[in-house]
Image 1 (spheres, rainbow, N blue to C red):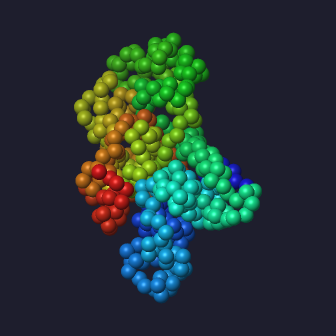
Image 2 (image 1 turned 30 degrees about the horizontal axis):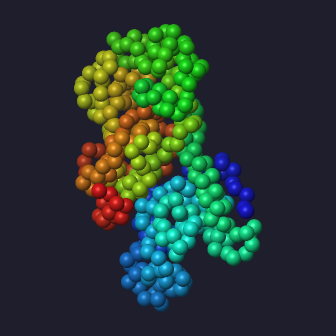
Image 3 (image 1 turned 180 degrees about the vertical axis):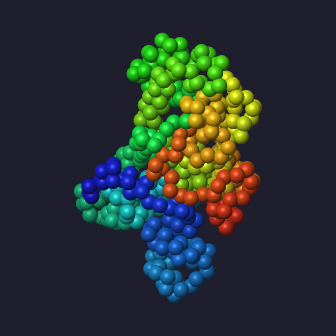
Length: 404
């Protein structure tokens, strides 16, 4: 077996690439679902060809675009029906488009049925493994057990790799938050301490908890007191540094134990619908619009509706600006249109016309973290148009992913 890359190299390979378009285009998804490898599928898509265009070609024309007889057969009908797009998307997402055996991020991959389709008729995500071409060939070889990749070995590799993958985004966020130019702007304190308890963090053991508790800023169960309620915002007083530190400690301890998904570069309705579920913790960096709901500028209850929308994905949540962590955050960063980083928990996922709407609970806001977003979207607005849209309405509507 090829030696796996180090975690640092894996994360660098995944996060370091710049991509303006969707990570998984329609043509690539359609061809992968029919048994093509990712390299061939991407080449076909880059040449401007769609699945429908390929299916209209005769064999000579297909050979002229580089398809062999096996691929032509897969295109025509193949030995099995196509894998549902949502299933192959989720399998690829959970494995970071990377072979679960060798974990080499730059190799072409293919979707492999762990229990062969002919025997299982099972297209479920649990039965799909992402393999490079070499290990896919080994999985289908008939040599000795030592040489073969048995279903048991593949399942074990898939399980171990997916556990590691689930930590990549959390590690990247934690590393980015430590950079000198990174600053937290707002905390949903109650939700942070709630998430910490859910993750098994002993709040009272956090280094600064006892100081904040003795100052009457936080109760023994992590609830905020009313000591600062007369201020413009929670941290306006001079005795709140310990509360800020303990809240940041709770958030970082939670992230170190919890899966979180950075979807900043993946705001495509079909993909998000396939991979994101209510309850998931997500990170989304980009331009947000802040709209006051109350007009209040003193004490708790300074509710603001916060929204980001691009590429027919809308993300919204409310934030009480009273929980801003600094004067600059309260007075300017959390108002108007700003480019920020948001840690959110998905509450509901809804189809809103041609938009996929993620209604979320805000957890924390920060300045833009370096390296966490590479894909350009338009300046956000409350209108129904963005310039970074696919042309095919059926694809955008998410019909291929089972959107309601």
